[in-house]
Image (cartoon, rainbow, N blue to C red):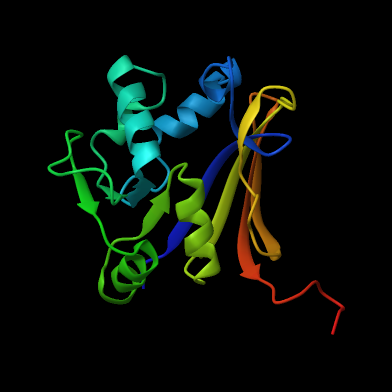
Length: 189
């Protein structure tokens, strides 16, 4: 059965972006960029929402380092506001319920999937019990004054079983987990 990986890039304090900061908070180093160029899960379909689609397509067109590999990847965009056909190559638009569509892709498809950005989409897929792996790349910055898009707001309680970790360029942390959505905190009735 195909797997689904939720993939986040974050500041230490859990923000997806911050006002005035460049992509990757300006700290992308050669090891991290080499890992991106190796395209982990390069054959996976990339899932995203409309805002992430607009942002990433724009960054790719601007030549942002590390985004060029996205062009050739299969992309599925969930949106009720975008109209097809989408301009970015290898992109398919789905206007229906994302969790239902991903469940169908996992049940009947052969291609594994990963997300990029798309905080609300990732939250809904996790709540629906569809996420197999949860990967977070943490950059060594705290963006308390300028941070926007807090990643975990609105999430349920989730237990995470670590399956991998790695350090890039002596400062960027990658951690991977298998998530389990909890009905209540452990040890409570």
